[in-house]
Length: 343
Ligand SMILES: NC(=O)c1ccc[n+]([C@@H]2O[C@H](COP(=O)([O-])OP(=O)(O)OC[C@H]3O[C@@H](n4cnc5c(N)ncnc54)[C@H](O)[C@@H]3O)[C@@H](O)[C@H]2O)c1
Image (cartoon, rainbow, N blue to C red):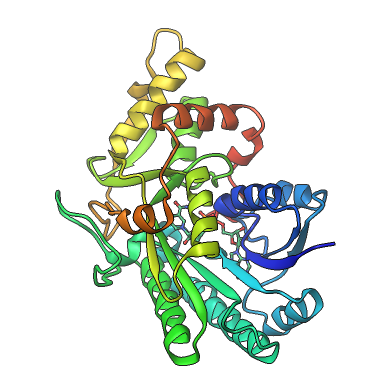
């Protein structure tokens, strides 16, 4: 009944949930195994929903568990991997760096090794594709000008970005040393439904709802490059299916905003959707002590993916941000309740 089976890791997290939705409806004849450890960052309701999808098999388990990985490859004859699973929050990486090395480095190593052995054994090493989801944070930080490209030297600054950079280097080594058919994508900051309450945009939304102070690090002028999560999903699909073996692709809409811009835009959306009598939501904005090693600016040049794979971002920022706020006010309202395990 199915033409192929793909392993997606971390499919109950923010981007993974959006990607499984996108990929499962776009390719109904592809079976998707979603392997997710259901850490505090996962959405159990997303995992439950996947159980009702005809071509998705959600499996609770850890990417570091090689025996489980081997069993999944054998049982489902997996011919492609799209690897999202990671510890993803910079603040948590400052509190507990080793956990990031375990999941992001050791987990990627386990996944690469089991994939390599299975595809060698089944004589598919040339065709079977391993796609690793990386981040623009591996390139470090920029001043007021300039852009990252795929050739920018790695200069990670946080334990999170260092662990992602290490995973990327392992992927590159498996391409060169073993001939693995792997690709890497470096995406900028995503926004959209299903993002965990600990991240910046859901935090601002939660604070606006509760009329609590909105904490901005430092002066709030750090610049991030923002992408609608659904544009990211289309880009990952293109790189996975058509990207050149061994290549990296930057994914960005080149939409630079300061954290203050984002907070003010969300406050204005709240003023319209949930008026606060006698007040404006921007009165809630407050400034707190900066994060150690806080990168000033990220900005990337996505020319390669645009030229080679004809990808372009379609999301309109104001409209997509409004849709995001509306999602958190309606079906996503329970995702704003902070998890007990949140640090
Ligand atoms: N969110 C962004 O803006 C952004 C930007 C660029 C790149 N990325 C990358 O995209 C990927 C997904 O990010 P996200 O924001 O969706 O993350 P997330 O934290 O929302 O989700 C991560 C998912 O991985 C799962 N997971 C964690 N450890 C695991 C393990 N050991 N085994 C199996 N599953 C495990 C979690 O349970 C969770 O469901 C990550 O690799 C991240 O580095 C994210």
